[in-house]
Length: 280
Image 1 (tube, rainbow, N blue to C red):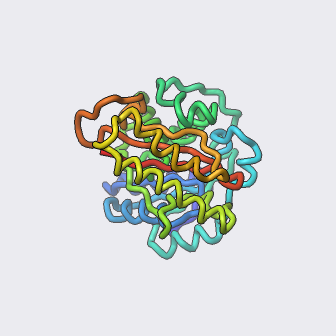
Image 2: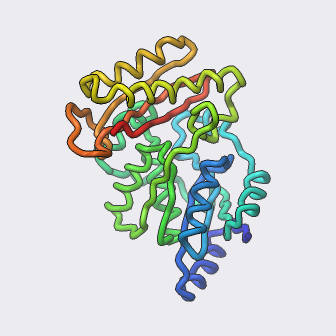
């Protein structure tokens, strides 16, 4: 596996690959890799000639500086994992490679950036759009792979890719879960043992909503999930919403499969956790 830190070197390597008609798959990450990331990279390896994984903890998408500081960084372990699964290139740039100048671009990607996560993390999606656009322009991948745990983020990236004609085929991959149902996340390592056990209730709340579909009016489904979580005072719920899967707007009646998704955000032991589930 090649480990590349500079845009210039990566561009040279990937230009040569394109000249040889090789297709490029890309998995952007912030490191602290887990089985969810590995599933994305493995899929990319199976569908492309060359797979690039980036590791870059992007400062512009953290609205809380303390959150940025405590975000887990495990580059040595991550590198070993990538070598073991046969990833072709690790792109691990320093901040000044991605942001040689302070970022000033403000994106207008519509309401998808201001609701739910956007409301609780102002500026977050602007930072996501900024770094993804830069990485796409550096790597110029044929395909890019994202985990659907960050479902709203995936919708934002779809909007970004369309608006800026970035010509990348996006693939959203199913959420990988731990044995107790907790969605895999780099932040899970920050959870204390008891908090990690408690976090299993997030998945249970989503399953309750899914089970209630068809027996309960759609506009009451979120209440079922919220009431389950409220049985656990240690879980600080920011939002629990059941929405249109395409635009995250409230929905009254489903019209076709894949139309409804439940999304939640909580804090447990000071660690912010999000999850979601397709309801129909």
